[in-house]
Image 1 (cartoon, rainbow, N blue to C red):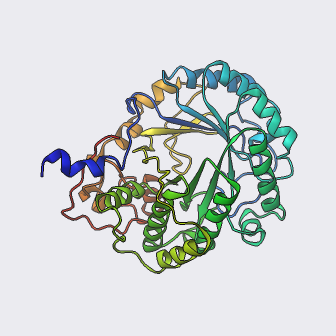
Image 2 (image 1 turned 90 degrees about the horizontal axis):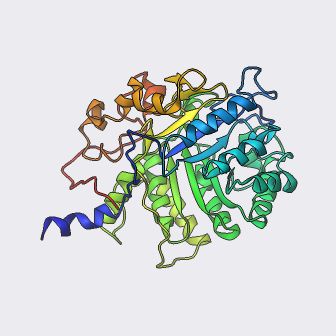
Image 3 (image 1 turned 90 degrees about the vertical axis):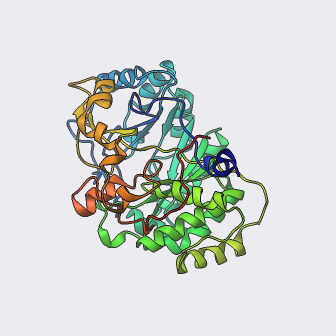
Length: 392
């Protein structure tokens, strides 16, 4: 067997952006406000009902848009999040300017009564192309308890349909915790029934309001990643703060059709429920995941202009009101270190998948205080498996 023949099934498991991630990011997230009417148990931002007095004003926001556009071509994906971005009166103006600068714009609003068809139409007319909505339970009981406000589930489901009717591409985000992990197959059924561009599973990091007792065990996380992989015949799935998904994709594509190894009871529970609810098809919708990590292809900008490797890694590396974003991204020492897999320690440092996974640096920091420690949510023990970091 030739080398090419050995690695070709593996290289299809990943794709590479056609840009140098040390030069500019693939995606930029801007927290336009921390104001939000929800009281989510896991809130990274610890959002409050009213805007912070020092959040970037319209003029500063427009200048930030210019800085993002000046990062280069092709432009990064530009996502406006919060808090609840719909609570900024100038949101359409910010979107229009971003579109004028040729930035692809997505908006991530909160599921509240402010999320009306009229407001959705305003941001669509301004040029937003994608809406991401959070669905954290298969029913109102679970979702509303998680979001802290009765009626959030109904607002989210209504807005989901209204956004699709307006022509938006809708991504559904689900924060995966111990309290809702058993409902994931039922949530997947809703996505299949209602339709969605993609499903992004957010693996909780104990920062902000999120606490360690909400986090999955390492075995549960592994089980969920394999469950997400199995859905590729009916849903396009992604994982946030679970870069081990890239390892799982490589392992599974190396042995297509074979049952996954080292799975546990959560995988069996979700698989049984999936088979009850969802069709079996031979089609594949999988877009191979990108090897993008905190500070390496990804950057987060707070409501005050502070720049972070990710929203879950609260170590600021600069402020866009004091230094250009492109300069921060390319030269900040912490960001440069995060792009060096040789600095990883423990199991992550010894792992053959470290160049394409690298573990969640946010979770390592939140749980150990060490940015480069092993990701505690990955149970994988490095071994002699064939691994490559090829392109797709």
